[in-house]
Amino acid sequence: MDAVAERAGFSTATLYRCFGDRDGLVREVVRGSPSAAPVQAALLEDGPFAEVLVRFVEAMMARLRDQPHLLRLLLFADAEEIRELRSLRRGEERMSLALLGLFERRGERERLRPVKPERLAAALMGQVVGALLFQRLHGEAPDAKAIVALFLRGAQRPVREEEEKGASDERQA
Image (cartoon, rainbow, N blue to C red):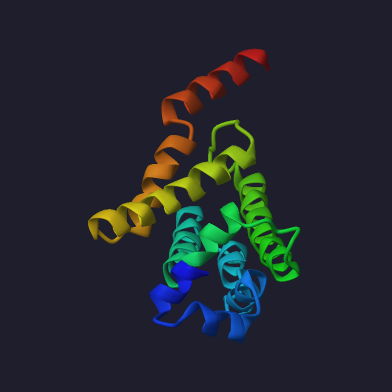
């Protein structure tokens, strides 16, 4: 609370008077945070796979850039202590489930490697968080298209592998 008060330019006593305690402060921060629904909605749109992923990455980066405290809350706060934090986590889980669903629905058609959708989601989300961290350290804005292109380069099976798979299937038939 001392660090928050100092950064906000208030006394610690003022923070306690306004929010009661640390949980009260967290509650208000979470209540003021936008929903994960727009990020999730980007995954439900139709269109070419790479474009859907770019819209998702752009929405995710905008959310984390506009609300940098969200990542810290999701990673380090104890959701069992604060009801509003459980609600925030549920919203993030729904968004993650939508990403998993996208990988499950379109994995074969998009020639994704045969790995669990959870690993693909972790890889993509890790690239987004890493790009935002790099921006914070070096000031270079991340490019959603570049993130998606790099992700797909690693996530999709090479064409050569596809041709070998097709030849193998033909021999078995």
